Length: 435
Image (cartoon, rainbow, N blue to C red; front, side, top):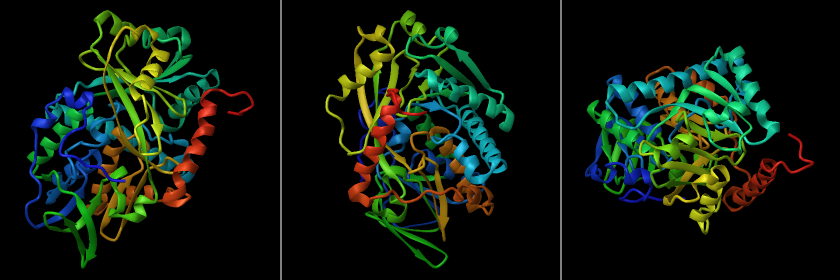
């Protein structure tokens, strides 16, 4: 799978930013750099930032535009942790290593806020994330994580919200309990990454758009990357392509699967309606396996995401289907128009744990599994540290087991779809299924 375009997709984010007006030229000639980063999304730009701070000569190439893929289309939710949550990481690495990774994630959230302030990035940052339960059986997931985080991670920023108090935060009858993370938050992801790119260039990072990496080879003590416009020689190569790695590195491509996810935006809502929906203006996501997530924008549009597909095709009647999901949560929004519908691809691993690693002079981070705003910042720190000589954290992540998807290209999609159907049944609390 590979997609690219000279223009941003018609998302609410593109419509409410200056994205199309900020163009960077493609590579025009051969290039020689210390580190080449492939992919101008969050992972690539965070890595470039950290390396540039250390005085490393860095270039970034992007097949489309800065933040064109998931980094510029996502839900904009700052959520601590990974898609798999922390218990699988504890089980694989031990509690001490998991605690170190948790602190890395907390540092990533702090770093995001610092970059926004330091570089004056106007991205509508707001504080707070609310994790909700739709099913009574899953309230324990909220309370158990609050207790576990306090006991084992000394994390005191979580606040349990019983059903009677939920209207203070979300005006929906769908939810039976919630857990606030006061260190979480939300922002306009495309405005943020455009600011991140501008700040990287101020540090001396060269960014080339419309420059797709076609192939790479290891040569001597580095790599040579072939593009349509020329060759790039580098001592270290970073693959920050996520769902779009494709045939650039078949071994990495086998460890992930592209999954389509989708969002809609309402027209700007009256202030009294918006304040009734989300009185504390937090980002919200639920703990269903196929989850819904939503938040208010600065202009009081409700941005609502959910669904997933594995075929690579956009579902039929997507706007109507997404609107039905929205009205299941907020039936009071029936009078209001949907102004934008869009989707994009994330990359998932089999166990939903992140896949960070290195091979010779090639480094990568992928497999964020739909939970990438904060972990990509952590990944940029991990990869940069390893390139600069401190590979401790990278070695920890490389202990996580991320096998190839079973079935190869032919069968992995139907096998994954069958597995997801089972978990979708669990979301509907089918009698006889154990939790």
